Image (cartoon, rainbow, N blue to C red; front, side, top):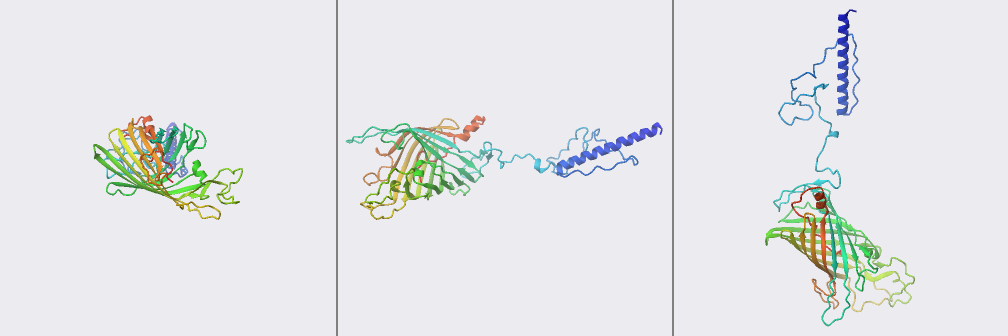
Length: 450
């Protein structure tokens, strides 16, 4: 074999190796794009010469626009491929590995966001919000003013305490939102007016999760929110009442008025119905007493031995609320009023048990009033000073009492702070807040709604 034949044989061998390498590269690319195993490489021999492939690496003319896979975004010519590219065709990236930045995805609980629907009553364009926007922490430090009526002698025994309310929120979609409320109270003083049997005890309130629906169309500028939920007996009082759970339904109407007295007025009206479920219709002692105390007039009857009190538990409850706020710049005065109506279980007449002299009634009514002035310190912190009173509608003389002031009812003057945790998180991340703090507008202290 002469030198010319050897040179021709070398060219044919190099050409066959190039074709085989390009075929393997195309097969590997197809396997990554389609998820199927590559076909076996073609069998090549040295007896049949294969024409050489087109010079890809040295081609300077850009190829025509690619139309396979996804359509091109613009009409400009596609730039040439980089040097030494084994193929000249482009394929669409597989859907499984496409990068996605959709707002509907939830990468994490802290960074997940959504864009709410545009409010027809507002000219502001909706912007993306964190899904847990509205989550707040409120704490107040209060003291009961000790006021003695003229002509009466009363021991000076004021109460100083702190109240905490943690209210998380999480938007599942634009219309569905999870909310919850957990409260706690701690008394710094210990005297005759203390509300706990143990000195300086942290008293938890009930845990109240709920599911809110905000997709009801706005009518006459009124936003309507419907909610359902249940209460869990995390408080010592509910556990003593043998509470299992408290299912409830709530309906809220919210109306804002712009340019009222140089500010923005907002009125909120809501109603909540609940039907608590208990083990027993009366409160029970958590521990068995050392001896059994007989009921009044019961003789040897010991049916009242485990009773914590003679009051029946609440069977049904209906609470109406009115909240009015007026915002002037950084100042926001707020008025809150709750009317709490409760129907207790009727106790049967038992032999040997003395009934009440004037008969008994199972209807109870109480109220809660709160007047506060808020000041927006920054986008996530609000300072508050306020006054509140929680009382029964009837006084000791069975007359309707003053719902706003009574020297012998549960009153507080307090200083408080409200922290919008989502706004605080964004402030730490360096995001500027231009809209100010978002108030949850829930009751401050009253946690005896049910």
